[in-house]
Length: 139
Image (cartoon, rainbow, N blue to C red):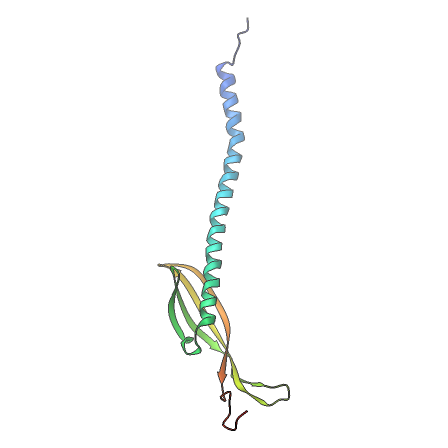
């Protein structure tokens, strides 16, 4: 005579099969979670890089050599790596202009406490005035 329901062996086999089906789903969920954490970390680094470059582009030329500053909750440290030779700005006719052009290469690092969030390099043009706007002879 058969009885209704599952035997103990059938129940153990059913739970084992369910377990084998659930393990890949759990692995997939962990992969998704780790990817989300990496994405959040990369977004933070990109935001820090954009803020750092905006900060460095707004600095006066005299402050480019080296320094540090605060951008929000992050600490920005920079150092001038190199600068291209000064080139005079010429008009279309070849006449010397009022400015010389210098390209300064800055290496920077953005930190959150002791942890480095972003590292980068920025090439920044610097215009140096060679003559005042209004020469002594007028226009």
